Image 1 (spheres, rainbow, N blue to C red):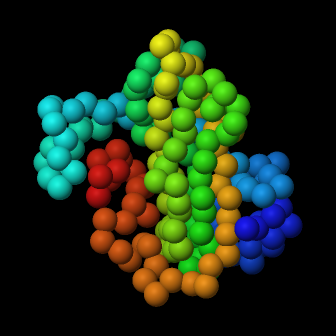
Image 2: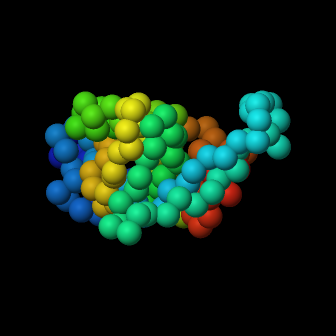
Length: 181
């Protein structure tokens, strides 16, 4: 696992690319990620069959409220972009996890858990977070606030970098429709 010194070193060497980079978000053993301004609601039309993409929920842009906050309703799962974009070399792996501050409030910030070697390697990519409200009341989240951490680990490299694999999310750049690609 990379500590703060090593995170700064791989950033300086170009193995880790972050735009925008803020040295204040380098933690003792992780890089903090902030909530971006783009989020989506999930609208399903019935049973979701994971083997049939035509049954996947529709992604509907979720606007911020009049005060610029993201409102997450009870039990709602909200795919939302992390602020900025990243790129990992084939020699780095990221493990993303929500902050303890959010967890203590009943909010899960998850991803599949990992950002694999080569993510955003060719063209920096946005990380999509899944935010779930486990409370009985709405939760108000603020874009640009620290939302989760990505622990970085060194790896021995990958035979097939993530960005060239089928169904790679490294291309999540512009629209919510790419979240299911």
